[in-house]
Length: 604
Image: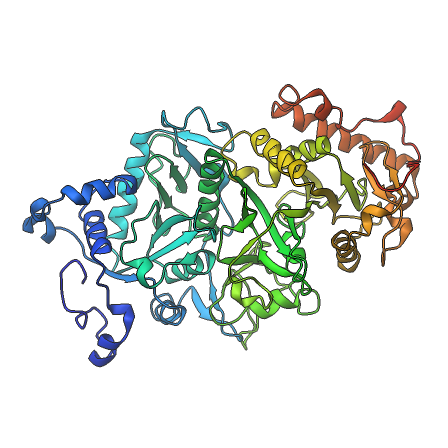
């Protein structure tokens, strides 16, 4: 309708009364730049967002001839619609895969893909960025030709839809560093998801909005497997030079969110700023901030949603010369096992305006959070404002504490350790946690997993670039660093109770934990506190949690081998300094030993 220059009251929704069509802003689009940008796109233009300003200055009206316009499909364009409007359209046109929960959240199915497809992610190998990117299994190169074929396939599919959703928004709460993002998609579910996850442009921000980066989500249409570089019908392609991302063959909304993170992981270090896969919160009185790093299931979202602290964000942040800021405008929380008792803030966020993915509901539309028959990876996306103590301007000062989260299912690591600079680098680039039984087919015992910087699938530069930047900032701002284990207590087969983990975090925030006596774990050389308020002292020493010394020795030996193999496999052994390499775990004299007690107060 926009491209046909028809009055706002003319549309494709005959079931909507004419007076409602005129009054409802969803049908009124009158933005000059947006008009030209979308007309060019739907007419088949391959102009990159980075070239749009110069292109439109020289573009003449006769660029698109009348005959060309007649051959171009003209879907209805729904730009920056409200949550209510998006939900209405989701229920009207996506009824088979979208419905409402008992609390009003939009419940959606992402189809066959219920998680990201990292093996199908591709980065266009261009001269401008080739020397910066960490090429390998994380960043698989793609030719410009293959990208443009996929781009044309995505755009051709999108312009055959009856309606397209366009979300214009920002990545980043700091206006000095934010990036303008445009999402073009055919599913209402995807539009509401990204409206929640980014910071929507409003008012005058929309008038001259020219995106730095465009996501073409044609995920309901498969990739052509015969295009060079494709290995399946799914493809997620990022072109840094063009500022574009193509999604084919997957409806999982998290691909868009993590695509923005991947972009920020490249751009921010290029500009001297540190982008981190982390959550953050702050003390409401002192404004002291804490960063939490961790992979899925380690507690990053749960621990940052602290009722006694202000939430800055739950997943993506940038540490600048001024402090930290949240990249996103919302949160993306795991739903498996969610309860009001353990996570009240997140539980209450599942309401109208939120999106829940791949969950099971009973006959009364009540979400069954313990039912993971569709996937273990059930999720909810909601705006930051749904958390009562979230900061509207999601920024904070330089962190006082940085906490690396691991879920150690071997029961070997201490529940909490204080880290030196060299240990921060070693453990940050290692990124150790565990995959648990039942989360993937074939896993019958916990499996060690290593994800550099606690976000390896999203890294663009070599991990040591991020690790050294982090260590420099910690040193410059005199921030304390901790390794917090939210996994198993020794050989018990039971995970550390959340109340103990929260008590440890509270002691870190209060400053009391670094003032107690410390001992040293002999294999990893980690300094751990011998006491902590509201935590049984005996469980702080990992050796106390094993009845069988031989079993402990075997578990330690196996984990040491896995750490060593990971460091060698990724080439870190030859890339780090001798001081960092010295932090690698070692079996002393071939057997497990009792910990030695530190002689003087807090760990160095």
